[in-house]
Length: 263
Image: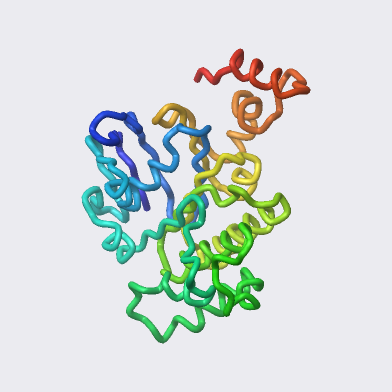
């Protein structure tokens, strides 16, 4: 469904953020993109969704293909109409609109208005809390509730490809588990293709079919989830299953310096 071919991205004509990034997403699958802060994960999603230019970024090399067509130069609104919806890091709900108004905003570009009620009901089956909160202003929701709303808003666009950026960020562990279980359920029931950027490798690999690991602006490892889970470097550096037991923060910092990932 999606192919990034040797993408290079520069911010403000001087900061090289992506350095020949290539990845692919198969239709109907959940794919996760893992990596530490600054690895280029969010930049990759913004490149796919066309939001990069609004933040001073520019694709200087490579191509993006979506459903066999080159979408490299398309604007964000055109990409939404083509079937790509980006749920950004930090949720970005409209705080002064109600929950229901936020959900309906996701359907702004749709022409099949007669199907919106059914889709709204379907989202309430995934996130029942949103139905109870429908008249409340989104700015008064908890972080977890806002994340449910952000995902629901994305579903209301009826996308072919849903991009999720750090859905676990700033959310209580129990809600993280619930949200990721619902992401899996959405994929199983609708067949929607989902690309998830996530720092919490354990939860991401728990629902994904395939994964990519980014370091310093490029993909350094990819494979089926089973393969990544059995990779010693992935287990040690991303899943917290190491050879040494580290007991305090100073030791953690020293341990990470000694054991930087070299692929």
